[in-house]
Image (cartoon, rainbow, N blue to C red; front, side):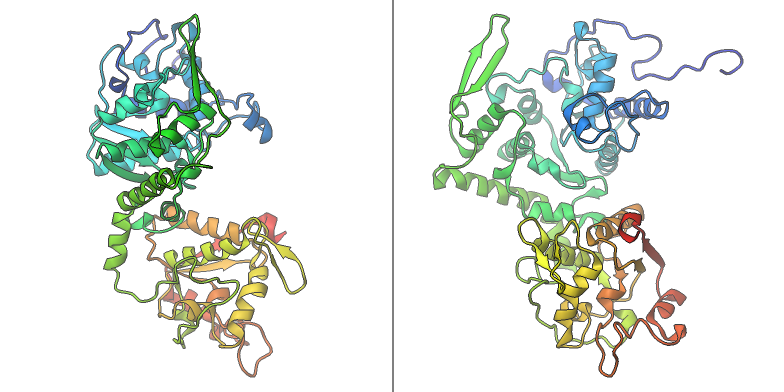
Length: 503
């Protein structure tokens, strides 16, 4: 309390208790949420999380993660919890309406930017993407974003019979721009409704921009890495929808078939439309080559639209140090020596984009079904492999003949490090790379940032020495590359600590 009066939490709908019913906004395309309303919801959500009023609901995924009833933190809350624990608790079912209708009080808010996104992305990351987009596109506080969570009535989502009757299609085709919002793992590309929205945007020649919590794809922080790799290897035909009928209908639509093929429609007495599969096939199996080519064509169109800025940036770089593209070299089997030696060990750095490519190549050999064995016969996967394992099955065998380092083997260009990485050899490489990505994100580093990690930069073998990595483990500390780097050559140190791995 303050001066004897209770402190009242500000709410997005103004002052006092919410009143119902709310005026209906008939046209779905007019249910965009303004930037100001979105930030009001963010503030409200943060406060609810802070005081512990948001709990994980009793649904299967939360049972699987053993978190039902636990407090949801602001850094973890997703659109799933926003919809179930805020929208549907503030708006009663008997007066059901969309969140936009609730806060707009009947005012039409035509869609300017259509957002295609993944509900499982954290709300915080979602808003980071919105903020980056709004700044670059100079969005005003009253400019609106069409976001399905807030535009649709979450008590009764009505999609219609045909896809063109869905609120997604109506809003998207009338918008000025589609904003494809990719989360950190690019799961958005695996959601079939998002693929449908991408297909519709391309079909209608809409401006399509691809954004992440770090910025627009093709900008400095997002010129390489998992997001760009997901776009380069996109396979829209592998995307899925939670509803089998939606899956069948959208796949038919993209393939150029009658979208209702294999779907039976019935209208119940209360007017509710019910769809059921009339056949069990809701995949591309058995389709003609012509139908499958429609998906391949969409894959290429997405890459062309989304990666144009990335390719332009790569072409501008005056460097010959790019690592071999994934698929053309197998790091765990063989690699061709670049023919270049770098005498000064402190100049054997790897750019962030090169490090990402190297990790992607290693991961490609350790994914499910492609297990490698160490010299002791131990089987390792991407989930379990440590740097000691990679040293055994990759680094030592490949560098022994040429008496070189991995950097010399794969790159060959002198690069002065910006950051020195300190990491235990028993650290799992998956956790190692996750930590480096977090470091780069926190400091907003471009993918041209150069890192130094001794296991990649130093030569494991040296004539006349029985020691491993003699360039690093010198008799005098002053002679070690670590001392020379830390004494002024690098901007800072990135220490990777993973207690579970090193315990």
